Length: 230
Length: 101
Image (tube, rainbow over all chains, first blue to last red; front, side):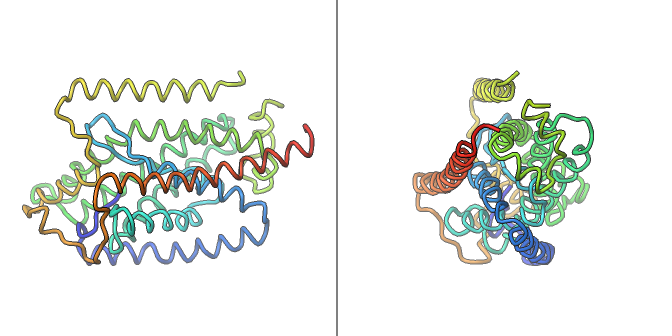
């Protein structure tokens, strides 16, 4: 999902930075609030952030004959919301811009918007829509994580389509072209990422159910049922 | 079932590997390049410009070789792994000290 350095015109770099910065500020504010309220949230933040580091470092082959990264942002979005997730993503994307030539400083804003903001925000909406229903807790986590991954790549496609509308068909035609490159490649990766993160969430819920309950991430009944006690 | 998710994850990984083997079989020319650079190539063909004419807006260090890039990606994953392992271990220790609930 990285837009490469130099491949986004300056005006679009500025637009996406302008979108990202208020969100990042809100994220830093939320982060302080959450950690001040409950120090036990810190290890959970560590685990969910760690999986962003792990999954976004993997380039996996896909059906289109190219490779792409999972994002790993879903768990963090579920536990802490998209604002805090955007701050964690900024750290990862900054590392990749500085040392890996994946993305870059001028396109960092655009990459934060796709991986750190829009993807996690839509994943979060999926989780919120399903949280208080009878849908299985792990399925909710799976779906939210897979959607966060997929929407990240849809956003990248849209960012590129807006900057490079096709001569025939404009933004929509151009979006179709980038959609095939990014989003189709991503479908199998999103599914596997969703399953892996649901498994990680199972271990979190087995080891530390009280933090999931205290941060009101899932209702107590669903947590008990997921631990096989209900 | 106790290990339902683990089994599901294993099946998914196996399916993923089979899909990869199938892809390599039906697309013998596939390079498995990063989708980032495939996307950039598409930008070049949409605009009719050469790939080389897209120069970084902000000067950028690039890993001198694919091996070094792989090492740095491994380092990123290792950092995540250490943090996740440490915290899971701590939680496990805490829950064992408290006794089974």
